[in-house]
Length: 112
Length: 117
Image (cartoon, rainbow over all chains, first blue to last red):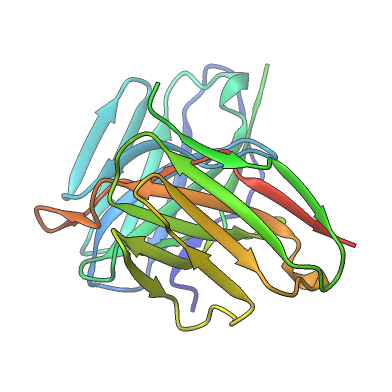
């Protein structure tokens, strides 16, 4: 079993819709969770971090964390074509030197 | 603007010819990381420096080395590149490894795309 799993997609949504991206992780010691956006050929760009169970909102983005289910998700409201990218989920275990374990990423395509 | 800079952005080398990739940061962060990302794969941590303390990942090949001469700069040396080393190399920095018990946020530079002929 992979340590961090994401559906590779592509996930296609129409402009203005809600995009839902999911991530599961295997290490129950994980305590820090990050979502990065990566455009083709570019480096990862931080969208948001989440550390506690529940929802965290930042503009059009909402991260949701459920440690009991070992599940973290990212919702993008009012999706725009400029949101089309690969979204990487990254998970860190405390006292592992800041090491991030990345999922394979989910490719999102927002159609005008 | 404070940022993470990588040079060159594109590097072409020949099989077996040593190559050095550079990363610099104006964020004054204590930690600098090197990740390797192959096409359509997740970034994979190679090693990191916490200040001057070097931390190698167990599965990082000996072919990969790193130097951090000062807070601002960090180098990735590939001693004898093979075809399998073609990838995007990402430098990331964070203020610390953990803040109040949680892993600190890492900020990535633009990356260097390495081609091995």
